[in-house]
Picture 1 (cartoon, rainbow, N blue to C red):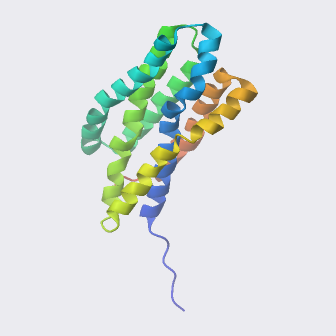
Picture 2 (picture 1 turned 180 degrees about the vertical axis):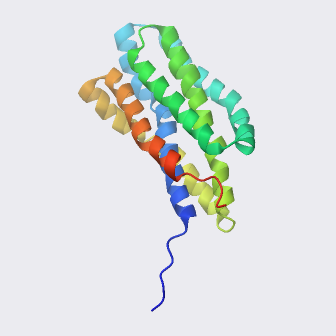
Picture 3 (picture 1 turned 45 degrees about the vertical axis):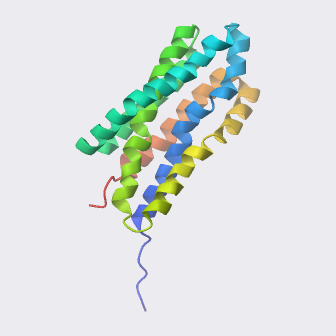
Length: 193
């Protein structure tokens, strides 16, 4: 009787990256769902609230190359865990925010920083290391998680309707911590070696 080989671990890494992409980029991409409730509660101008997202994308753009360089020099697992920790603190911080500058700091700065250090610049290269054949397919499937993070807004909308936007941010933080810390702490390997 022939022994059955276990499935290639690289496929598990791809699944982890797919889930990670949905969850971490879902924080940023669910911003439109939070926009109206925040406007309604605080009465700030639309432009002032929209700066939160602009600042977030700006910080992400600045930090992504730095995260990528550090990922090739340091242990990527530590960088991802750092990024997830920052995201958890940022989303929980958003649930407590009372002033506009709180949102600028938590959502604009910290979510952008957390996305850079737990996102594609750090975890994407792992797919290159795990897959020599089918690399294009695997990279596309990994990026698909980022695209599906926009659908995550539906989940967030349901939480907002049921429990309010503050509890939605708190739920995001809890979900990030509960799913991503164990996955990346115990199962993420940047290279097959």
